Image (cartoon, rainbow, N blue to C red; front, side, top):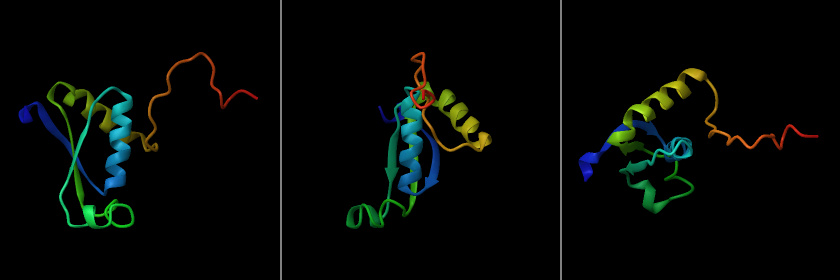
Length: 95
């Protein structure tokens, strides 16, 4: 089963990893985070959330799409935002 998951990327800090995970989740791509380090258990909020490298793994079947989404995000210069479901009207735009 472990071979069904492939490493997509490695980032600095848990917060960045969680944002990327949320972004990919919004596109239907499950993500597993893996982080080694002393800080994650001792200080999970104050220190552990920003220390160390975090690896993001996705299912082999989703690897190509996840790479494309990540590449698109990195080249866009935009902040990480999940896709907005099409409902017909934008609540923020209505006044």
